[in-house]
Length: 224
Image (cartoon, rainbow, N blue to C red; front, side, top):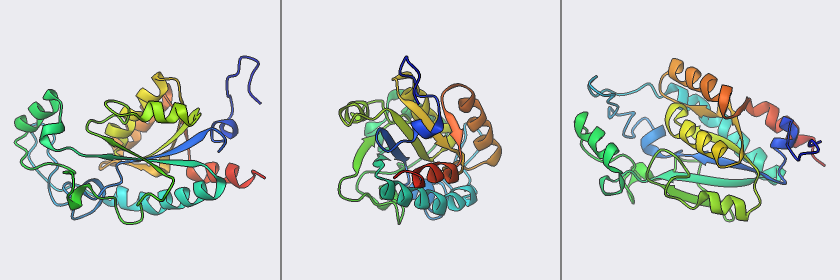
């Protein structure tokens, strides 16, 4: 039960379909497919050159997240898909500057192109909400907060990619905007295992309740 002050204090309460949302972030071809921007060699940390990334962590995560989405639908948990269009004309100045500094050519997840399409299996269904963003946070420059509040959502179960960038930005902002934030660690991924684990530990210490998808599905399965 919630405390007298109304604070939700257990994972059972946080993931209750009555007021919880499953937020699926950036499960798009350029981020998640071997033939996408990063899989084919578009990764370029500042000053370190361009190279392909190991897509294994993303690929291993995909079936777990698909299973969680299926369980969410069965439990009546509402779904919110967040997608990114990173065309140059959408980017804020600092991200355009970074692109120039690392010598990146081409756009990541360009609007209307294959790279920005949802990875196979992650297409929204009728009734799902779709939010489009142009920066790392799912809240900045979008109507996500208004949509969630209008839908009387209290808790966000945040999934997708990348753990250390768009997931972390969304978790931080969601927390600061007054939502409970839950992250199933096996349903988020990045391109480097140590970066993924370090980021989970960091924002798990401050901004989110870290759990596993099996635990969330177990709680949902117990609902009448």
